[in-house]
Image 1 (cartoon, helix red, strand yellow):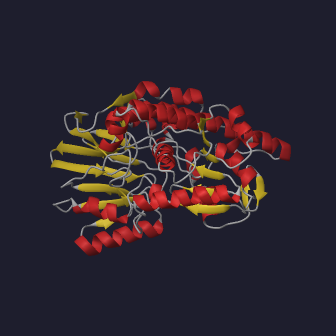
Image 2 (cartoon, one colour):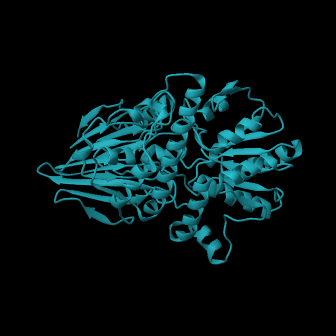
Image 3 (tube, one colour):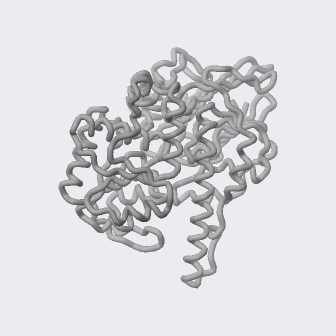
Length: 465
């Protein structure tokens, strides 16, 4: 059994792991690199022949885990894409949106380069098209949580709820061959305990090998009470200043969780029923999927639906599907909340709203998720000014706020809690999906507390298990 690490190595995007076991070549995730320093990898050939991969196992549909699948299919992959039923519903929405964004960004870059008289670049062409994305859909095969699926007479897989986003999974691969039985667990992105909407993450008491995320391996999140306090403070301060509140959103889970909190705060009269735009066609579509997949929510959320109370609706909420409706937001007088993608400001409608608001000291930019190194969101969060948006440079004068507890990722305490459930030490723990400091902090914690074998693989590093 061999594993090769093809992304999310000392970084948090591009998750992808090649597993060669039991006579099969399997890819676990096929994520897009979203950091600017590594985005060139998206255009490079895959470091393996795609037509030799029999199965792609998908932990969840976030683009840093799924965003290169259309490219994989375009270059020859024709095997099964295994994912949970909820992920199967979400995948077409996410990937089609990504393909449209690829096409729009390529057209924008091509036009800009032509105006500037430049020779152009590979960015003038989409990484993949809508047509490429649609060719993935016949390959999707759903696997319910906790059901074991045999891939051949030596390899079995089982998907477990990761508690990260709707449909997210930890994937257990069991290999039985002449060397005996071994299992490897891919944690995917581990969720937090006691979060609204999602169930708690699954835990395990034994594994031979673990591939574990480490996004917040060096710090914890605020508790849920502090989330409500901070969010109401940011909303009310922005309204009192006469500005607009911009929130870059991840369309899956984060958008819905924000709607949940804004709804609750307004019901408790801690914030007014302010006009709120969900300016993301993808987030709007995904919210409809959430309403159809109520059986995957935690008990509290299911009870809300059973009582006829959608946690995703409240007075003043406006859903903006079209480009024209998005542009019309600029004509609104008075303070508004504008929730738009993308979550790390790497494209999408948030950039256009930011151009209008970034020089206004009365307005606020609120981050509610992890900002990868090299993204525009990270630059602004780190206090860099001026910044470049849509080919132009702007000084950052608006206020910036950050509520890390909105993250769908486990904090350090949750990561420790997840590890503490192992009763038998794994033979090796591989740490991925973390930047240098968090990944080293978690590595030192595991080694000093338990003495387990642990390492943080380098890009393209291969291990013989």
